[in-house]
Length: 467
Image (cartoon, rainbow, N blue to C red; front, top):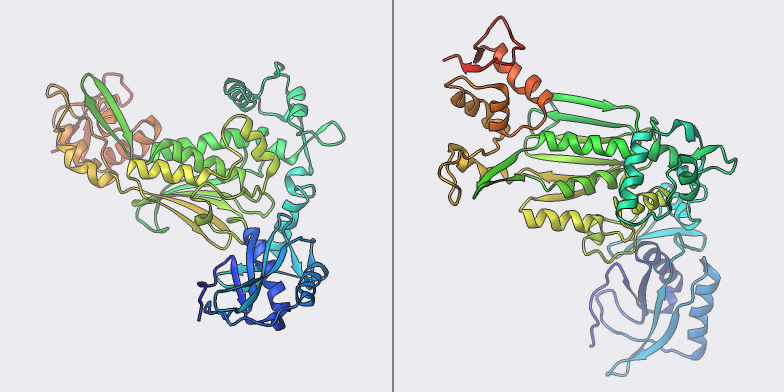
């Protein structure tokens, strides 16, 4: 007996056209998930070809049933195929890009080799995409006008878009630019929600950022919430929060200092801007950044597009699904986002090249990009100040992990050191974070002391280990 393989998410087998209704349901489920597929009548579930009697009327019945019971209409290839043993099957090759499709008025979605009824949220999201987002949140008028635009963020965006050559008009007048970018409501006064989110200090773009003492959400060492801001401005704040929280390794190579982050900065930037480009803005939830000891997570509220998984997009060949078509379109002009669904592939490629483990995870209401902090393990052996290939007269200024900072600081301060020297030694760029989270606790618990006790803010102040 001839066997033609296994059922997949895009291939379905039915024993005969007696299962025509079930076959049509499978077509719709596959279309809603993948946009194309193949259905065979005359094949068992395990791929064995059993064949069936096929006449011209059989082909017409299949074609008519598809036309009558699938909406929106599709125009598949329906034909018969005869195998070497003489057995004949009906095969249907189909494709469509007008999701969501229904079969007998019911939308379905493919999961492995099963066809399950699509939930209401998934159906609604697909409908918004099908009608080009005309009724979506981003296309509704906001309460904001051009006068509410954050000019610093606006200028940052416009300068970048012109530098990369994707905006070529000369005007830098906000009203002209908003009209050019199609971000004005029909009344000519108010911005669309998309324009307000991109350039005004709104509460729709809120984000919560926190650092935790362990690998779980138990004790936090820092928490910060940005209740208002623009996508342009808040994305930079989120990037900087992560950059300041992660470790950096600094090597002296020849006469130059080369700094290496534990997570590629471009991958962080890609994940952050994608979290704003693809989030759901009207669900009452905020984006979230969580810094753990072993990983850093970026949460996008609203989850991954319904009916799809991150793995489908890792090869960069999948057709894009844009939840916020207008917002992502504007971010394309500044080259912050591309329109080819290649963001996850770029993040994965950057992390693979750096040796940084990255994980994409879907949760009920969130999509999560988790960057693991595994590179620090390879840096620890060099914390004694030695590093092959560097100038032997130069001090190896390796960036120290949080777990080892106290030991390194106390050893380094066996002789008096300035605050700037200590900060540079352990590789912390943010002075405020260094002072409040690292230096002050050591002073408070008596492990570090000031050389001029009565003048804590003196420019000549130095610090030395208490023992």
